[in-house]
Each structure stands twice: as structure tokens, then as C-alpha cells.
Amino acid sequence: MKAVLLIDFGSTYTKLTAVDVEAEAVLGTAAAYTTVQTDINDGLNKGLRLLEEKIGKVEFSECFACSSAAGGLRMVTSGLVPELTGEAAKLASLGAGAKVVGIYAFQLTEEDLEKIAKSKPDIFLLVGGTDGGNTECILHNAKMLATLDADFPVVVAGNRTAARECEKLLAGKQVYICPNVMPKFGVLNIEPTQKQIREIFLNRIIQAKGLSKVSDLLSDIMMPTPAAVLQAMELLAQGCEGESGIGELVAVDVGGATTDVYSIADGMPEHMNTVYKGLPEPYAKRTVEGDIGMRYSIQGIVDAAGLDEVSRLSGLSPERVGELVEDLKCHTDKVPNGDPELEKLDYALASMAIREAVTRHAGTIEETYTMMGLTYVQSGKNLTNVKQIVVTGGSLIHTKRTEEIASYALYSPAQPTSLRPKQADVWVDRTYILAAMGLLSSHYPQTALRIMKKELEYHGNSK
Figure 1 (cartoon, rainbow, N blue to C red):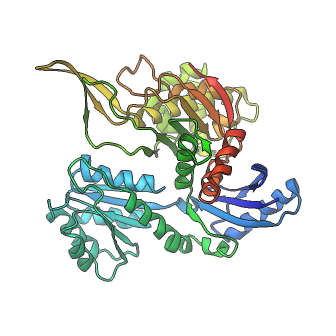
Figure 2 (tube, rainbow, N blue to C red):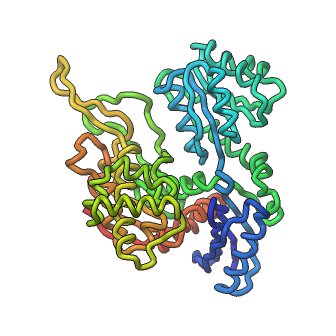
């Protein structure tokens, strides 16, 4: 047996997964409260004790970890135009596993600097202008950032003509120069920036979060948890040498504070009479809906879906829904535990969280008339032909209605312009192994893929 330990230092729980890479099997899992406010080792050691109770004493040959503890990897970005370089910066940050806590466009103001300082980012991503294009904006923003008395590294990934000048203006700060995230109009090049962000996380942020205390335990890799999940989803979709994937997919993780959506798909127009509008989106895309969550962001679900819709789905009166929502805002740790009203409400909330989050993640299509006749204009990703949906999160794994909830990720005639999947099989991560498999895939991709195929609970076509 060759045992590997995989650790996910989550914002609430530290989750441990033990794997036998030779047998390609999960030995066991355990979870303990993340004690990042005191000593992160306390929660880890408790989790290790719980794991040992389940699987016995095991000598681990390797250990890999990811983390979203202490707020995860907090990033602020600034670009020239919101729809272009600003959007490119956002895509680069989210794809690297960051939590974007501020997005700015055009020239930064004194008020912007005050907000940036209050948001306490771990990294600032400074972009703007295509190569050889506008330099005024990015240079202005570099000068403004230089006046800010804050200790965070700055990644410069804008107009290459201005990159070195930005570095000089930011003298005294930790600066990293990367290729432009949008070197030409409408062309994305975000991978080098994502790699740099992850390296900064590895080398600097781990210490800032107190995670260096466990570095002696780790064999090699540490990354943001969302980056690990995205890596697992890419592997599951595309496969690797010697093992095929399941094909293009959409994955949804409904959490207490946010809902993360991942798509591994081309997403471009299918028909000749459809034109694409805006930036082409990455094959592997992640979005985070910070206003949609089952407890901390419960009001965001109600606001997005509407009180009447939540009432209709739950079978509870609008008044009762309102009362329960107010109670859950104050008691974010409350779970149904057999309470029929809370079970009905959580079903409705999770369904609407998935519907709203996937709708925002997916592209849209609209009709327009030109000299050539009827034409369609697509913005964002076309996910209509994606056949696989992966879901996780407490509200989906602790219910018997998982398939029903997952079906709200699919296309609905009520939203005819949304390019969500038309029909799909459902895969459920009931044991929270996705981040662990993303970590494992860096060294044992075949094993990670085969374990996911075995461990994810498969349900046939959901529509």
C-alpha cells in the first residue's frame, strides 16, 4: 500500500482524505473545525485523530494540501475597460482560485484607494491596454498604488510597453511582471498570470495565513482550494493518458456564503448564422457568486429568485419563508436535522441558488436582424450541449432530492435566452473529494481520475 494524505484547509472545516494510490481507492475521510484564528494545527490534529479512528494508524508516503482558510486568496484587479481588460483580469483571477474582492476600471481615484486598503487584498492584479495601445491608464494606476501604504504584491499584466515603467513606479513594493492578459483586442492570454498568482500564494500567502506551520508535513504542493477543484474538473472532463474523461461538464458547489460554478467546455457558437460578442471565454472557466449562499448569503438567493418563487417551490407561505430566512441569517450553523419546514426551504433555496448561479455563468443568445436576414448574437459560453453536471455542497449531499435540485442547472423555456445545458447526467460528490482529487492529479492523474469515476455518485439523464 502507498498511502497519500490530502488536506483541504477550508474556511469552516479542515477536510482530510486518505488515498491508497496503488489500489486506486479512498481509504477514508474526516473533517474537523478549522482553527485558523488560534493554531491551524489544532484543527488538523483533531482531523488526523478522527481519520485514524476510521482507518487505523497509517504511514503516509506523501501529503498535499490546498486552502481557502482565513478568507482564501483575496484579490483586487484594475483594468482599462470593464468589458475588455477588466474582464480579462477577473477571468485570470478566478481561474487561479482567487476570491475577487474588488474590480476597478479606468483611472483609480483616492476613493478607490481607500476601498482597496479596507478590502485588505493578498494580491493586486494591475492590467490595462493591449500591447502597443493605451499606457496612460495603467501608468496612472501604478502611481496611485505606489502611494498606498499597504503590504501586498502587485502583478502587472497589461500593456507590455508600460510594464517596466510600472515596476519603477511601484519601487518598494513586491512586483511581478507577466505577459499581457489581453495582448490583442479580443485575445486572452491568462495562463501565465494564473501561474504567477499561484506561485505567490505558495511562496507568500501561506505564511501570511499561518499555514507555514504545517509546511513540514507537506511533500510538495499547496494551492487555493478553488484551483484544486478546477484542476479536478479539467481532469474529469478531458481525461489523461491511459484513462478517458467523461466529456465537457458544468460543476456547481453551493456553499453557505458563495456558490462556485465551473465549466469545462468550448462554449463557442454552433451555427453559421450566430456571431460572437465580447471576449472569448476560457475553456476551463470558474465564476463565484458572492451574493448566493445557503446561510451567510441567504438573502441574496431570495432577492435573485423572488420571495414568491421560493415560497412556491418550498410549499411554505411567503410569510413563513420570510420568518425562516431571518432566523437562518442569525443562526448560520442551523441545518434541517429532520425539520420538515427547513428541509422544504433548503430544497427551494438550493434549487434557486443553482439556477441563478449557472444562469450567470452561462452565456446568452439574442435575435437580431441584419441585411443578411435573421442573425443570432451570442455573449458568453454556449453550454447547451454539455451532457454532464457535477454537484456538491451540504444542501445537495445531505438530501434525497439532489437530482431535482441539480435539474435547475438546465435550460428552461422560462429563460429562453440562457445557454444552459439542455439535458445532462448528474454526478454527486457526497464525500467532498473534488479538491483532494485536484491535488492528487498533480502527481497521480490516472489514479485521481479513476477514483473520481468510482466515488462520484452517478445518476442518469436528469431531463
